[in-house]
Image (cartoon, rainbow, N blue to C red; front, side, top):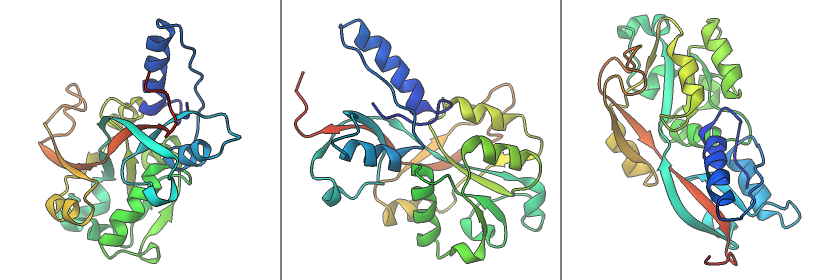
Length: 232
């Protein structure tokens, strides 16, 4: 089964599934990857040995993968946009619409990840080109380090609220989460996204994150396999 980074929820979900299947006498081997795009490539390659994969909703063009089937939607994966308050002083220290990112230093996800695919889709529908941003395509831990050092103004991360990587963002001083004020418009344009309300403190009660109820956009993480998979 193709999962993702060891720090991500795809991998941790795979570990839980591995333990559950072991009780049924089934051995599941996990493969770490760069994310959704890598997973689709491996699953579509007959010589890869991959039978299952976790895939971010909305990334795959179904027509290009006729031999793959969705087995089950597993959980929402919100897109979290973490930003440094000082970078948005002219907006009162708040990021609420993506057009505010013009001219900023932004990590939009690493090559091979679903984060990169979704970030590009959001920026495109927002009318923002790469030339209008100082874009970096970083892995989550790399983006975290640069945000912490003040080398980035904002970071796109697609992950379920339980993903361990999110905990590392809590402790960065002056960092907040974006609430999508145009969420309804995005779900109309990108129907694979859902509007999800995140209650104050649900990400971290101890650190009061988020500091108020926020709205995020979320695709669904899906378990995908081959069309000839046994019903059992």
